[in-house]
Length: 278
Ligand code: SAM
Image 1 (tube, rainbow, N blue to C red):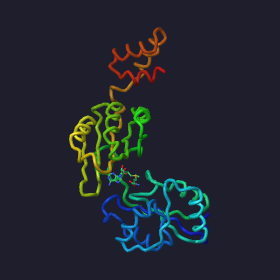
Image 2: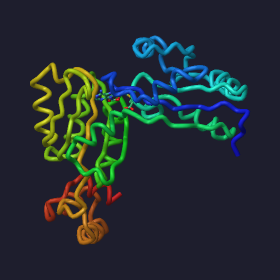
Image 3: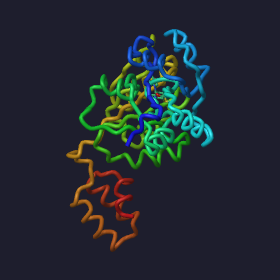
Image 4: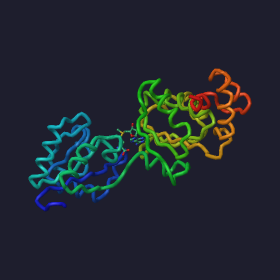
């Protein structure tokens, strides 16, 4: 039950590059609320200034402690209305806000979305990859070993996969994806969406990696990487017949040898067979 004595928390999307992408409802909301909770108040000032929004700002970032959430909750309980914004795009999408929204909902505060730009959705909409079912994976682990391990769990994912990446890791990320998903896996790199140097490239992972390695300017900016899911009818997928063979051979031979033989006979990937074997 929502109480009318409580304030409202608005979750307001802001542009991901092009200021014209802000909605008139977002501007109205940011003007009418009592406070704007911003991920980085310094970063948001130019945007707010551009639209003559003079609402007082409070800081609310990823590392905000319980006491910052407490402060916002107290304001909401005192009937103040608050708009949460992030540096760009939709708050909570690889951005802070989850704990605050969860808490506000638990305390019957009205939480209202003011939708708008989101890099993942903008990229998917132009990717030409299947968009009927997709998963958003956000940022991958920063370290190579953890990243490879994470990607291995997505090897058999059939839905389109959406990732975020920063310029200093884009090459390492594509290298690991090429190793785990295979050179021929189709992908799209959407770079600097809605900005001056917007580039949307598609091709196989190895083609995209070659291209980006050759062009240092293509390594700059913000990236969404979208990967085609695996085709479930793909012959490369391990089927029941393969599993049966693997089981029989594993009973007679060391796992490694059994895997190696099945890989030779069927042409299936050793690492995938090995996973099944253990
Ligand atoms: N909340 C944002 C959203 O709705 O998309 C995402 C915030 S996350 C901290 C920032 C990441 O989003 C960037 O590292 C990049 O991967 C992606 N991103 C944001 N703006 C982008 C743009 N204009 N073009 C491509 N990717 C972008």
